[in-house]
Amino acid sequence: MRTFVLGIAIAGAILPSPAPAADARNGERLARRWCASCHLITRDEKPPTTEAMPFGAIAHRPGFDENRLAYFLLAPHPKMPDMSLSRAEAADLAAYVAELK
Image (cartoon, rainbow, N blue to C red; front, side):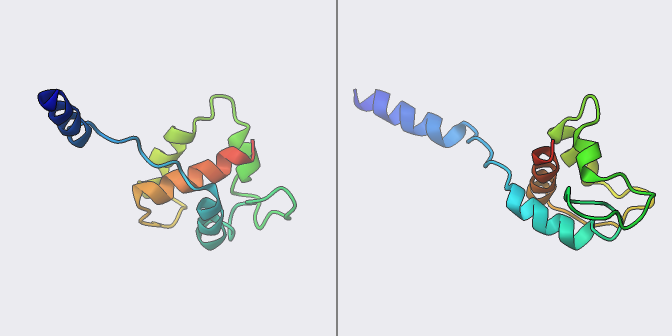
């Protein structure tokens, strides 16, 4: 029994824990800070430009995938500022966009 309990404790320490859920509220704060000058980030705003796709339209694109968006946000892209987001921040921002679906 003692060996079993020790084995469970070791397994718990070795196995990866599930990633914390993304925080869409923090994603909205990040969107207001980094994205609002070019993107429509909520449904009730007027678009700041015609060049950048509204977040709601991004969320409704066929094949939209929150994880792919988070990965996309980690690397700088032309016409977008280098936001230097952490993985958690990129996931938060993607979770916010996904909520607009």
